[in-house]
Length: 177
View 1 (cartoon, rainbow, N blue to C red):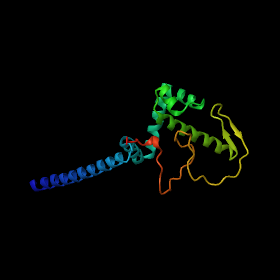
View 2 (cartoon, rainbow, N blue to C red):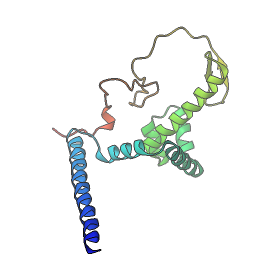
View 3 (cartoon, rainbow, N blue to C red):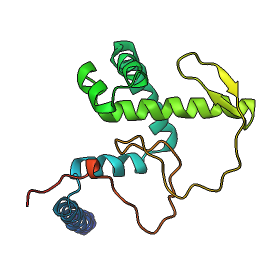
View 4 (cartoon, rainbow, N blue to C red):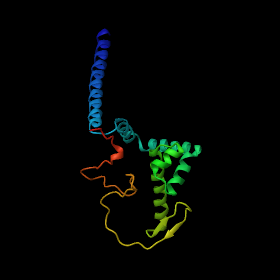
């Protein structure tokens, strides 16, 4: 019985040592990323969100949006963006994180796309009235890179299969020279 207990404790200790080594390796990778100008806190969130079950992630996002909408700040900020304010200006004025506004805009865009899809290719969605309008569209080739809103936020499709991913400057901390 004592040998069996000792064996269990030894196995647990060995696994804990391996875990400690892996934790140190992960810490080193985040330090390397920080040295290259990335923000480790943001990277940790990205990794955590990527590892989450998609259903859980969607539920968490929906709850967050519901609470923020209940507080009213996100809605006011999004109205300001539609009226011409930048995401940064609207976020600061309404006490909302810029990332929250970007996420809300992406969710709204998905809703627009679904509405337009239900009405066919030649339709656009007016977010101020909620109306769908039929329009003439020219044939266009595939889009190679994402369109941006001038602030670095993507407004179009991304090529996720690209060998290199350009990180916009606002997502990196610029080190003083």
